[in-house]
Length: 294
Image (cartoon, rainbow, N blue to C red; front, side):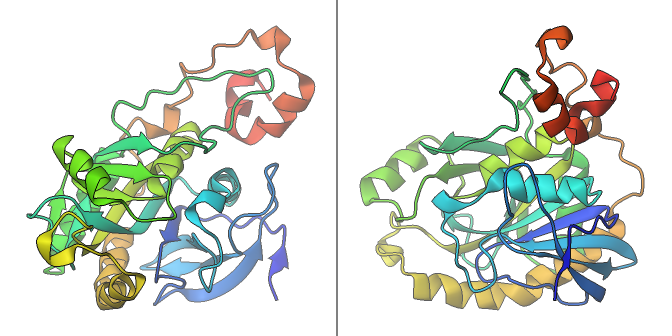
């Protein structure tokens, strides 16, 4: 049974995507329920020790894959990590490749995102408090380098850099759409990561995606019809590699952060402090309390 509303300090958060609903090697694991101002996250968090570090794991779509990309409560998921003390988030995601060079069963660590979604909330702010965070470089360079080096150490083909385009889903792309995304220079395509990245930045957490290529989307002559069966088959083949990368990356992340992610809100809050409603101050205290004197 999950422990309700337990706040356990964890320094690293791991988000498991399609096909990855648990994490191997997590010692002393405890299931924790976290309540947030935005409701319940996708599932309970599994909190434990991995490679000597305190880790919190969340199945993005819930165990059993119950939640569609369009239904994800991104704010609750990221805020839950913040409440548990997480400062870095490693996101594991299934993606389609939009370039011949990114082959199925290989990994890409994107350094850019393109938001092509239509109806999603991507901010914690509003209700009398406005913030504009810098998102020019949406991925933590320190965390991305560590993950890439972990891939190299484990002998897994990976590329550091590239652009992840996030589409609404849940349907896969049409051929016309896929060709347009290719003409824009996009590298990989998915349905979830850009909202996570934006919210993690607002929560002053480092964020990096480990994008596991499952297919060539529908543009490729040999992959003109993407199916869930094919994707899941490749996900299962990638699962062992992903687990190895996670263990090595978690253990290699430096204890102290040298990036700018931890001060993303320092110059982002634009609202007159005197006019911020008390209810909003309370709701966002975990995120902005240090800047508002709370």
